[in-house]
Image 1 (cartoon, one colour):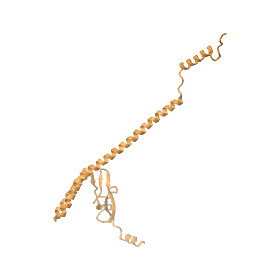
Image 2: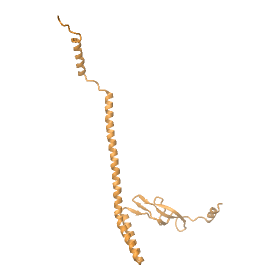
Image 3: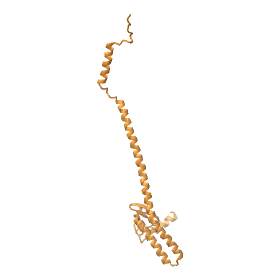
Length: 196
């Protein structure tokens, strides 16, 4: 008796040749790239680049802020070091004034301290704003009072109440000044006072 092959054990030579043909055809012709997969890969790559650039920018900002703060501290430190000798001399002048009866010596000592202070400010590029006799300039002057004057043109600075300072083009503090104004007509002022 011969064993008859079962249908599962027997392979059809024609079908096996067709399968091999399909496999070889698939490997022989390249498949077209999937545009969706390429787009996802490009999006992923761009996202990574963006995240890297954002992190670099944030690091740059932090580094710049720290460098600016260090520069400010250094500038303040430099100015304070320049001012300390002025302060020392001011203390010496005060102690000397307490022991001395000579007003001229005290005055001379204080004048020396003031000159030293002005030299320090000049070294830092800080200059006092010109005031008395100058035309009023709202960019560097602050008018705290107006006084009628027939001797000076209206808008002329008559007196300085508090000095102002500039550093280069930057206003550190406006000068508080008294400004001349034209004399008013006597009848106009009476009319204003009576409310007519």
